[in-house]
Image (tube, rainbow, N blue to C red; front, top):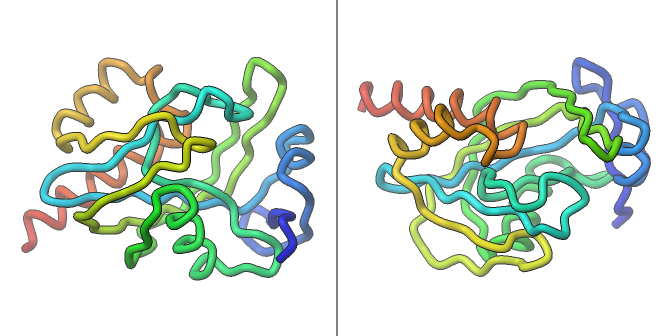
Length: 175
């Protein structure tokens, strides 16, 4: 399969493809996804490898990536969960959003990010090229740490996590 990522317009319609480095150097809007993994009032978060091209050493959701050219989100999400975490679990799409951020080195993250939620309670095996650490954190503790120390987290996590936490909280009250 081609490793190019999918370029999109602001409505998430595919308009082309390019390699990941080109998209981030030129600030091209592209399709991405973020998977949040929860179980029993806790969320699995990962600390990105310091060798990542941006946001190294910051905490973020359990898995995030880009579908490849010719690959659907339904194919990409379980593939990437296996590659990053050593497991795959059913994930439901919650919402999507667009964000743009220019990093100090000039790279630009401009993504149409699809946010997924999975419930998983098992072993994980970190891909050390992607993450240097992972931890289960209580949802209330995560919310408080995001409020007090947002600089510890990736820019997309700072946007998506409060929405995910709000959905989880709302669903807990309807169960």
